[in-house]
Length: 230
Ligand SMILES: [Zn+2]
Image (cartoon, rainbow, N blue to C red; front, side, top):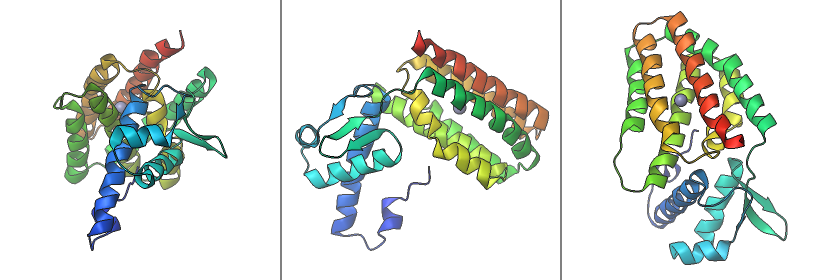
Protein backbone atom coordinates (compact mmCIF):
# COMPACT_ATOMS: atom_id res chain seq x y z
CA UNK A 1 0.00 0.00 0.00
CA UNK A 2 3.05 2.21 -0.04
CA UNK A 3 2.50 3.80 -3.39
CA UNK A 4 5.09 6.50 -4.07
CA UNK A 5 3.53 9.82 -4.82
CA UNK A 6 4.33 11.53 -8.06
CA UNK A 7 6.36 14.20 -6.34
CA UNK A 8 8.50 11.73 -4.46
CA UNK A 9 9.15 9.78 -7.63
CA UNK A 10 10.09 12.85 -9.60
CA UNK A 11 10.85 15.85 -7.43
CA UNK A 12 12.24 17.75 -10.41
CA UNK A 13 8.80 17.88 -11.95
CA UNK A 14 8.36 18.86 -15.59
CA UNK A 15 7.06 16.71 -18.36
CA UNK A 16 7.50 13.36 -16.64
CA UNK A 17 5.57 14.56 -13.64
CA UNK A 18 2.69 15.52 -15.84
CA UNK A 19 2.67 12.17 -17.56
CA UNK A 20 2.99 10.42 -14.16
CA UNK A 21 -0.09 12.16 -12.90
CA UNK A 22 -1.84 11.11 -16.09
CA UNK A 23 -0.97 7.51 -15.26
CA UNK A 24 -2.27 8.16 -11.75
CA UNK A 25 -5.58 9.49 -13.11
CA UNK A 26 -6.03 6.54 -15.46
CA UNK A 27 -5.05 4.14 -12.70
CA UNK A 28 -7.62 5.62 -10.28
CA UNK A 29 -10.36 5.56 -12.92
CA UNK A 30 -9.77 1.93 -13.90
CA UNK A 31 -9.33 0.95 -10.24
CA UNK A 32 -12.74 2.48 -9.46
CA UNK A 33 -14.34 0.57 -12.34
CA UNK A 34 -12.80 -2.69 -11.14
CA UNK A 35 -13.82 -2.13 -7.50
CA UNK A 36 -17.38 -1.18 -8.35
CA UNK A 37 -17.72 -4.04 -10.86
CA UNK A 38 -18.29 -1.75 -13.84
CA UNK A 39 -15.51 -3.83 -15.31
CA UNK A 40 -16.75 -7.32 -14.49
CA UNK A 41 -14.35 -9.85 -12.97
CA UNK A 42 -12.78 -12.00 -15.68
CA UNK A 43 -13.78 -9.69 -18.51
CA UNK A 44 -11.42 -8.48 -21.21
CA UNK A 45 -9.88 -5.05 -20.96
CA UNK A 46 -8.68 -3.66 -24.24
CA UNK A 47 -6.13 -0.87 -24.32
CA UNK A 48 -7.84 0.65 -27.36
CA UNK A 49 -11.20 1.01 -25.62
CA UNK A 50 -9.54 2.73 -22.64
CA UNK A 51 -7.64 5.00 -25.03
CA UNK A 52 -11.00 6.07 -26.43
CA UNK A 53 -12.71 6.35 -23.05
CA UNK A 54 -10.04 8.49 -21.42
CA UNK A 55 -8.78 10.22 -24.53
CA UNK A 56 -5.12 9.55 -23.73
CA UNK A 57 -2.33 7.67 -25.51
CA UNK A 58 -1.47 3.99 -25.08
CA UNK A 59 1.51 4.60 -22.79
CA UNK A 60 -0.27 5.81 -19.62
CA UNK A 61 -2.94 3.14 -20.13
CA UNK A 62 -0.32 0.40 -20.27
CA UNK A 63 1.47 1.80 -17.23
CA UNK A 64 -1.73 2.00 -15.22
CA UNK A 65 -2.67 -1.56 -16.23
CA UNK A 66 0.82 -2.71 -15.24
CA UNK A 67 0.33 -1.25 -11.79
CA UNK A 68 -3.06 -2.96 -11.44
CA UNK A 69 -1.42 -6.19 -12.56
CA UNK A 70 1.05 -5.80 -9.67
CA UNK A 71 -1.90 -5.53 -7.31
CA UNK A 72 -3.45 -8.71 -8.65
CA UNK A 73 -6.48 -6.95 -10.10
CA UNK A 74 -5.55 -7.31 -13.76
CA UNK A 75 -4.02 -10.28 -15.54
CA UNK A 76 -1.93 -10.07 -18.68
CA UNK A 77 -1.70 -12.99 -21.05
CA UNK A 78 0.90 -13.12 -23.79
CA UNK A 79 -0.63 -12.34 -27.22
CA UNK A 80 -4.12 -12.13 -25.75
CA UNK A 81 -3.87 -9.02 -23.63
CA UNK A 82 -5.41 -7.84 -20.40
CA UNK A 83 -8.41 -8.98 -18.47
CA UNK A 84 -9.83 -8.27 -15.03
CA UNK A 85 -8.80 -10.85 -12.46
CA UNK A 86 -11.57 -13.38 -11.85
CA UNK A 87 -13.54 -13.13 -8.63
CA UNK A 88 -11.90 -14.93 -5.74
CA UNK A 89 -13.33 -18.36 -5.04
CA UNK A 90 -15.32 -19.16 -1.90
CA UNK A 91 -12.41 -21.26 -0.73
CA UNK A 92 -9.98 -18.37 -1.15
CA UNK A 93 -12.43 -16.08 0.61
CA UNK A 94 -12.56 -18.43 3.60
CA UNK A 95 -8.78 -18.68 3.63
CA UNK A 96 -8.33 -14.90 3.53
CA UNK A 97 -10.69 -14.38 6.44
CA UNK A 98 -9.12 -17.18 8.44
CA UNK A 99 -5.74 -15.54 7.88
CA UNK A 100 -7.07 -12.14 8.91
CA UNK A 101 -8.74 -13.53 12.03
CA UNK A 102 -5.53 -15.26 13.04
CA UNK A 103 -3.37 -12.18 12.62
CA UNK A 104 -5.33 -8.93 12.92
CA UNK A 105 -7.05 -9.21 16.34
CA UNK A 106 -3.73 -10.11 17.90
CA UNK A 107 -2.10 -7.24 15.99
CA UNK A 108 -4.76 -4.84 17.27
CA UNK A 109 -4.08 -5.92 20.86
CA UNK A 110 -0.36 -5.30 20.38
CA UNK A 111 -1.01 -1.96 18.70
CA UNK A 112 -3.20 -0.92 21.66
CA UNK A 113 -0.32 -1.58 24.04
CA UNK A 114 2.05 0.45 21.87
CA UNK A 115 -0.47 3.20 21.08
CA UNK A 116 0.39 6.87 21.53
CA UNK A 117 -1.16 10.20 20.55
CA UNK A 118 0.58 10.45 17.20
CA UNK A 119 -0.36 6.94 16.09
CA UNK A 120 -3.93 7.38 17.25
CA UNK A 121 -4.17 10.61 15.30
CA UNK A 122 -3.03 8.81 12.13
CA UNK A 123 -5.65 6.10 12.58
CA UNK A 124 -8.39 8.62 13.31
CA UNK A 125 -7.45 10.56 10.21
CA UNK A 126 -7.60 7.43 8.07
CA UNK A 127 -10.98 6.44 9.53
CA UNK A 128 -12.20 10.02 9.10
CA UNK A 129 -11.43 9.97 5.37
CA UNK A 130 -13.62 6.89 5.03
CA UNK A 131 -16.54 8.57 6.76
CA UNK A 132 -16.63 11.42 4.24
CA UNK A 133 -19.43 11.32 1.76
CA UNK A 134 -18.33 13.98 -0.61
CA UNK A 135 -18.32 13.52 -4.36
CA UNK A 136 -21.17 12.42 -6.55
CA UNK A 137 -19.50 9.44 -8.09
CA UNK A 138 -20.65 6.45 -6.06
CA UNK A 139 -18.11 4.18 -7.74
CA UNK A 140 -15.23 6.46 -6.95
CA UNK A 141 -16.38 6.78 -3.35
CA UNK A 142 -16.57 3.01 -3.04
CA UNK A 143 -13.10 2.44 -4.48
CA UNK A 144 -11.67 5.18 -2.22
CA UNK A 145 -13.23 3.47 0.75
CA UNK A 146 -11.63 0.17 -0.25
CA UNK A 147 -8.24 1.81 -0.46
CA UNK A 148 -8.62 3.69 2.81
CA UNK A 149 -9.77 0.55 4.57
CA UNK A 150 -6.62 -1.18 3.33
CA UNK A 151 -4.53 1.73 4.64
CA UNK A 152 -6.30 1.72 8.00
CA UNK A 153 -5.74 -1.99 8.57
CA UNK A 154 -2.17 -1.78 7.32
CA UNK A 155 -1.48 1.02 9.81
CA UNK A 156 -2.79 -1.05 12.69
CA UNK A 157 -0.41 -3.81 11.67
CA UNK A 158 2.43 -1.31 11.32
CA UNK A 159 1.81 -0.17 14.89
CA UNK A 160 1.67 -3.79 16.05
CA UNK A 161 5.36 -3.79 15.15
CA UNK A 162 5.77 -7.06 13.26
CA UNK A 163 6.87 -6.34 9.68
CA UNK A 164 6.62 -9.96 8.60
CA UNK A 165 2.98 -10.21 9.62
CA UNK A 166 2.27 -6.84 8.03
CA UNK A 167 3.89 -7.87 4.74
CA UNK A 168 2.09 -11.20 4.72
CA UNK A 169 -1.26 -9.45 4.88
CA UNK A 170 -0.29 -6.66 2.48
CA UNK A 171 0.84 -9.12 -0.21
CA UNK A 172 -2.63 -10.64 -0.36
CA UNK A 173 -4.20 -7.30 -1.39
CA UNK A 174 -7.07 -8.62 0.66
CA UNK A 175 -9.15 -5.47 0.68
CA UNK A 176 -9.08 -5.04 -3.08
CA UNK A 177 -10.35 -8.57 -3.59
CA UNK A 178 -13.03 -8.57 -0.94
CA UNK A 179 -14.47 -5.16 -1.80
CA UNK A 180 -14.79 -6.31 -5.37
CA UNK A 181 -17.17 -9.10 -4.33
CA UNK A 182 -20.06 -6.72 -3.95
CA UNK A 183 -20.77 -3.11 -4.79
CA UNK A 184 -23.11 -2.11 -1.98
CA UNK A 185 -23.32 0.76 0.48
CA UNK A 186 -23.89 -1.67 3.36
CA UNK A 187 -20.31 -2.85 2.97
CA UNK A 188 -19.03 0.62 3.78
CA UNK A 189 -21.63 2.00 6.20
CA UNK A 190 -21.49 -0.76 8.77
CA UNK A 191 -17.71 -0.86 8.68
CA UNK A 192 -17.57 2.77 9.83
CA UNK A 193 -19.17 1.96 13.19
CA UNK A 194 -16.91 -1.02 13.64
CA UNK A 195 -13.84 1.11 12.98
CA UNK A 196 -15.11 3.56 15.64
CA UNK A 197 -15.17 0.73 18.17
CA UNK A 198 -11.58 -0.19 17.28
CA UNK A 199 -10.51 3.45 17.64
CA UNK A 200 -12.23 3.73 21.02
CA UNK A 201 -10.28 0.74 22.27
CA UNK A 202 -7.04 2.27 20.98
CA UNK A 203 -7.89 5.61 22.61
CA UNK A 204 -8.36 3.73 25.90
CA UNK A 205 -5.13 1.78 25.26
CA UNK A 206 -7.14 -1.35 26.04
CA UNK A 207 -5.62 -4.42 24.32
CA UNK A 208 -8.47 -6.81 25.17
CA UNK A 209 -11.08 -4.41 23.81
CA UNK A 210 -8.99 -3.73 20.69
CA UNK A 211 -8.62 -7.45 20.03
CA UNK A 212 -12.34 -8.01 20.45
CA UNK A 213 -13.35 -5.00 18.33
CA UNK A 214 -11.04 -6.06 15.51
CA UNK A 215 -12.29 -9.65 15.63
CA UNK A 216 -15.88 -8.47 15.55
CA UNK A 217 -15.18 -6.14 12.60
CA UNK A 218 -13.53 -8.87 10.54
CA UNK A 219 -16.26 -11.40 11.35
CA UNK A 220 -18.96 -8.93 10.40
CA UNK A 221 -17.11 -8.00 7.23
CA UNK A 222 -16.95 -11.70 6.34
CA UNK A 223 -20.66 -12.17 7.01
CA UNK A 224 -21.60 -9.13 4.91
CA UNK A 225 -19.60 -10.30 1.92
CA UNK A 226 -20.53 -13.96 2.24
CA UNK A 227 -23.79 -13.02 0.54
CA UNK A 228 -21.83 -12.56 -2.68
CA UNK A 229 -21.53 -16.34 -2.96
CA UNK A 230 -25.28 -17.07 -2.71
ZN1 LIG B 1 -12.01 -2.21 8.11
